[in-house]
Image (cartoon, rainbow, N blue to C red; front, side, top):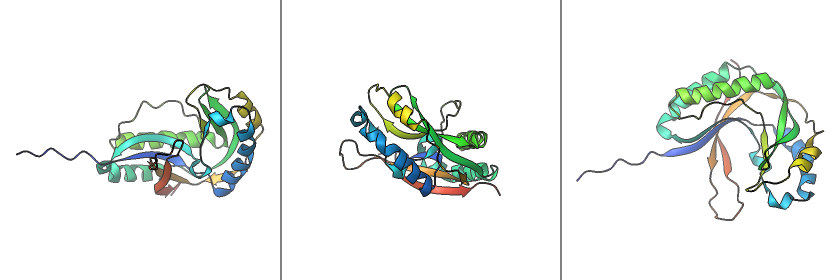
Length: 197
C-alpha cells in the first residue's frame, strides 16, 4: 500500500520595516479622528500593533525553503544601510484601502524592497512580478468602494517624527482563529536582521 506524501507545511510571510513605538503612537493619535467620519463604520480598521511597511509579500512559503530564505534576506539587509524614515500624509488604493505614506529615505526603502523581493525569489519562493513599490502602511480596508477622500484629506498634513529604519523583519501572518467577524490576523516577527554590516 503506497503512502501519499504529506502536504508541505507552509507559513504565510512577508518582509517589512516596522515603525518604532513612538511613531505608532503618533499615528494612532492622528488616526483617531478618522474613526468618527461618515463612512468610518463601513471600514475594517487595522490594529496599531500590526502597522508596518510591507517590503515584499511572500504568501504561503514552504518551511523547507526557510533556511535559504533566512540567509538571502540576511545578505539583503547587510547590503542596505540604515536610512531615515517617517510616516507622512495618507493615500488610498481606489475606494478599498486607506493608508499612511512615508517620507525620508524613500530611495533606500525602495531598494530594500527590491532586495527583499529578489532574495525571496532566489530562495525558491514563487513571487509575483515585482511592481513599482509604493511605500504605505495600511490603516483600513473595505469590501466595497467607499469615498476615502475625507479620510485622506484629514491625513494630508500629518508629518510624523523621523526615525532610523535599521532592520529588515520577516513577519508571519497568523490567520484569525476565533471566527469572530472582523477579527484581524496576528503578526509575529520570525526573524529580524540589522541593516548594514
